[in-house]
Image 1 (spheres, rainbow, N blue to C red):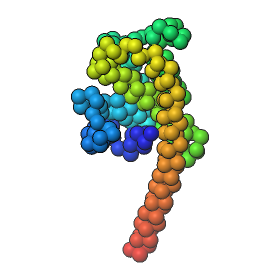
Image 2 (image 1 turned 60 degrees about the vertical axis):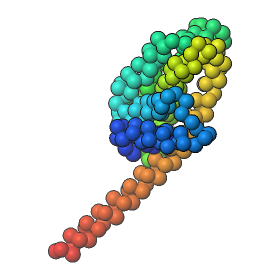
Image 3 (image 1 turned 180 degrees about the vertical axis):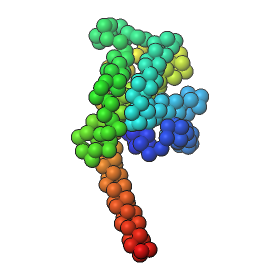
Image 4 (image 1 turned 135 degrees about the vertical axis):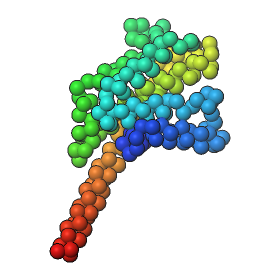
Length: 211
């Protein structure tokens, strides 16, 4: 839920490194062991990469990453494009991921960098929502790729159930990101203004003293 904040605060390469480090530190907990031969950081790193690109206005690069994940999932062994039930077909397993991709590369998303600086709660929340939606869908599908590779043929029978559950799960994650990240962005903007205001005042005072 806090990955959009990390994406805002630090450059993509450092953000990815932070996700990798955090994943391995977290793996020392018996409640969070490594499940995919040390590749457990990949979904979070993909989310961070897409979020970092999007908040910097690079929506087409972010969209390319998400599209590549969809394509890779489609050709990975033990995955399914259609789950064979629950309106699939015609809907592919990754229908919601395609919705996220469409929103990410839409004209609306070009406003993300500007809206994040707007001090308007609704616009900041919309930006966080778009970034979080695209990022968490890429995280989900890249996790699905690892799941298929490491679980093997046994994964095939689980896709219909996952297909039903994941939209609700991802909606809750996006809602959580909006609730957590939007106040943080607003408060950080206000804090930055106060710091800049004090810095400018000190500079003026020093200038007057020097005269």
